[in-house]
Every structure is written in C-alpha cells, then in structure tokens.
Length: 153
Image 1 (cartoon, rainbow, N blue to C red):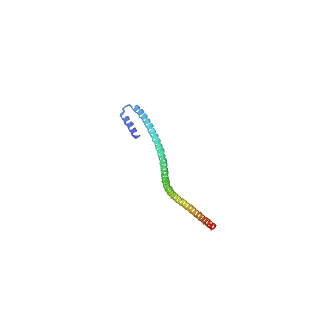
Image 2: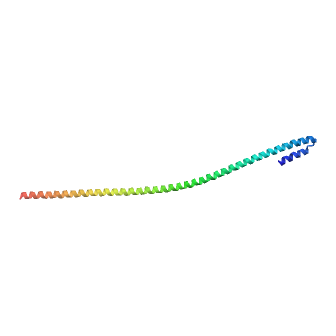
Image 3: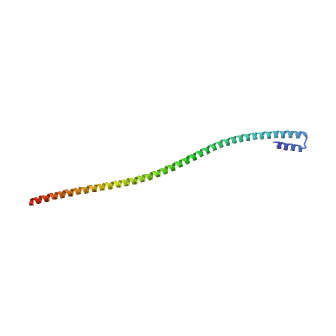
C-alpha cells in the first residue's frame, strides 16, 4: 500500500499543471489509493479467513488421518493375531489328521487281528468237531466190529 502511495505522490510531483488541476488529480488519486487500500485490506481479510478455514480443515484432516492410522494399526494387529490363530489351528488340524490316521491304522490292525483270531477259533472248533466225529466214528466202528465178532463166535 505504501509503495502505491509513493508512486502516486511521485507522479503528482512531476506534473507541472496549475494548482487547481493538480489538486483535483491529487484528490482523485488519493481517493483511488484509499479505494485500493480498502480493497487490499478486504482481500487480506478474506485471505486470512481462507487461511484460517484451511488451517482448521488441515487440523481436522490430520486428526482424521491419525485416527485412520490408529485404526489401520489396530487392524494390522488383529490381522496378525488372526494369521497366528489360523496357523495354530492348521497345525492342530494336521496333528489331528495324523492322529486319526494312526488311530485308523491301529483300528485296522486290531480288526485284522480280530478276524484272524475268529478264523483260528473257527478252525479249532472245526478241528475239534472233526476230531469228535472221528472218535465217534471210531467208537461206532469198534462197537460194530465187536458186534460182528460176537455174532461170529
């Protein structure tokens, strides 16, 4: 503002017109300078308000950004925990599958042993039955021979 006023005053000093014209020009220029000063003051005030609004918005955005960063950090921690839990569950599931396979193998072996034991028991019974039948037949055969020998005497 001061620079504009200096230029106006400098120009006025250079003009060598009559006093009346100079005064009128000076008056018009002074009025113009005052209007420019008022407009500059108004623009400066508007600029200050805009800067203030922008600074407030920057503060709000910074607070929002900080909140989002905290939420992101929390989500990352949760994600890490979920990954660890998943890995633990996967390992537990793998162990369970291995145990199930071991149990199935044992069950299969027990079942096979049971079948073998049944077959052996059946075979023994059949052999015992066969032995008894053989003894009975031999006994009958002896009785028959004894009867035949008595008849022939």
